[in-house]
Length: 233
Image (cartoon, rainbow, N blue to C red; front, top):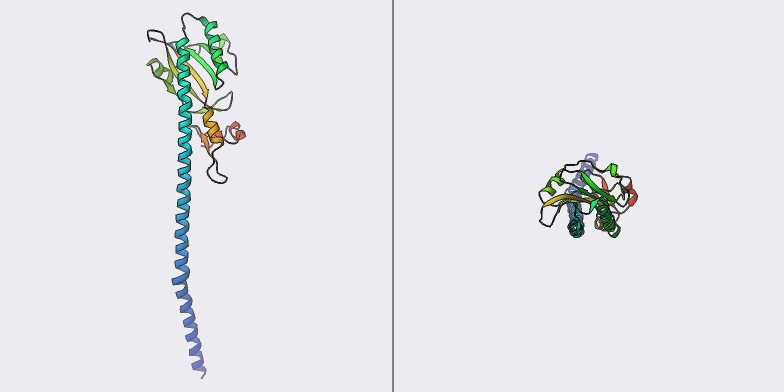
């Protein structure tokens, strides 16, 4: 009798174990796999959405920046057309540059160089250059391109004066016979870049920001972070 009872008990335990095993095999494990697949798909969908939003923001930033820089290039071209380096003299040129800065607050610095790369006039809304501070010979790629008649725009960086993102536009100065007689450099604040970034967000508690080619933060909704010159490389 005891033997039958023991066998019956073992049989019930065996069935229970099999039921538990089958339950895990056909219920828990498939459910876990389905959940894993679901969350993987959800995560990828969220990731794709964020990337899409980032691309849309980047396109808006690019279009806004291009629009502003195209306008700035036309303004600089207009300035070169009224410059006559051989007639106006140092005082006349400096007065013209300061007048240009007074009416266009996005510009922080204007510099004129002769064909040898020597500074002949320089004006800034933040600093008054003495004559003794001029004369530095700078022969960089942008200057060489201007001597070939090309216009160049530098990569974006942070202005040492205004701490706002800016670029440098370099273009040739030509006389009436279209002969290159000098080079103009203009530092212009990319206002559209900062304005667009400051109001862009990528979902809840996610915000857009811009770094320069060295990984330095140059545009973000929190100005204090930019002023710290944070390195996000």
